[in-house]
Image (tube, rainbow, N blue to C red; front, side):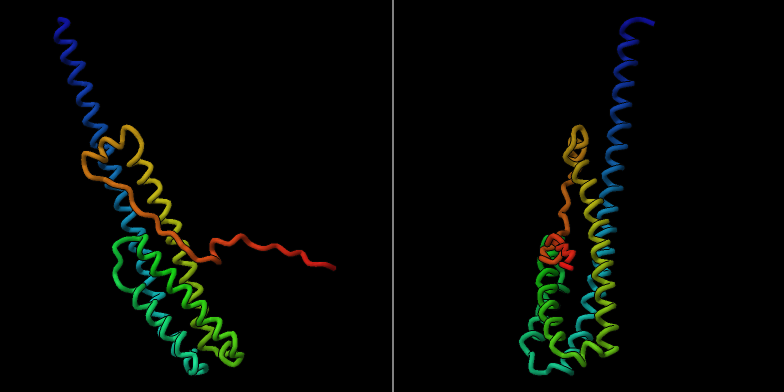
Length: 192
């Protein structure tokens, strides 16, 4: 075999290896994009569940605290905004934060009515809402982990070349603005 043949085989081998790598990188991007979309759909399911629980909770509290009309209207408006389609996770997170703040006010109203707090219906709805909030938080962690993986892959070399060629872009994180979630826990061992 002559030198030209060896060089030609080497070039073909390099091209084949580069193509195989590009196909593998593309497939990895598709897999990550699909994971991010699936994780978002799971969050959407839990957000819908949350939005469906809220009217029942409001009606239960209304029966005990009919004069708190402003709070009920605020919860209803925040729920309406949060359940409307958003342009992306960041906008959805902002809407959910407004709803969380409105729910906080609703629960503050409920605290003023001991009979309401003792109501089995109210306790069940509050428990279901808490459970749903926990599932949303778990979904948010799963989603954000997949977003982190995708974003890292989109930004790192040489994968960023394939990402740019095929239009793979960074995904948005789904973050909370809830002060209760962001606040550092307080530890108090008390004085004896």
